Image (tube, rainbow, N blue to C red; front, side, top):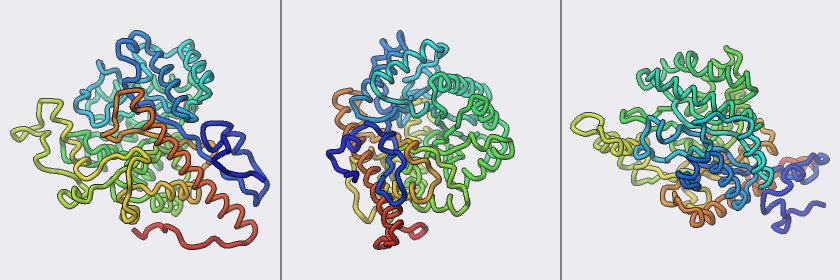
Length: 436
């Protein structure tokens, strides 16, 4: 009999995951675990800028070695426009991005082989490549620039042997949300055609990105919630690229909008769209009840500091204040770093991590053993640009995520496989959808 314990190396790190997820007879106890990874934007400046600018792939090699020390299965490789090429100054960003994958020069076969050798030496794999930018920008020249970069990301993903990229849809700020459905059809669907021609899936990050603009719009990424995902997927199906459009679900965004994971997954199942979620960012959100009392879930709408004398400030640093639409009532959680009032789970003011992993298994159409849990670090007080200080913080969070997934896997296997096969009912009720 397989004994699940802390002594089992498969429960303590990234060892023999595929073997452990092997098929077994019906009714046997065989929990299936997801693959735990980390987004390389967790530490943007791991490799000094003067080193990585001269030798771009050194940044990837250094991050792979760092990821090995963190005991993950995979990395999600962060790509971004180089700081000298971006249209958003770093001082205006709430969560600075990382161009770990530097694409100023073509990413060719020799560069890909160098990265593959580093991954093999570390015993790691690549989950996908992430580039998070506004693909529907209202400025045509900027939109073309971002699309051109995304195509370079597609090419790099193919050379690296991964089948997915992760990013935003975005929003045309000059148009209403309804008008953005046409913008999506005209400008985003062609990107999905390019993905399809390369055998790639585009996994959409559903953050509403409220601070992307100094305007008052909260939803600046139109793929922000299940109703929108379904509307966009229908457009994709009409153009033959439905299989290319998937969601990289992040529960922190649901909390930000007053939702809970189980209800979202149940809604997707009820509408026969529970196939849409193809991967996960593991990042929480902690709602500040005092901030909600002051500004509600729409965040601060007046006197934020991003406007001066009745107009958007000309100082890019002031634009960071646009994020008060989010930060006055919520703060990102690195999983495992926050202590939660049990009532917060019931009020959807924080992520119920165990039920998140249970609900994924119970309600979504997933190949669990091939599904990626990517730890994304945006807890402001722990955004330390120091390799050694940050390492135990990330190690602890990653270990927490792995064990939460293991606990959920064990509960699911026991309840849905072992007990069900013997006709023994499970006890209690558990968290239910639509009751919040």
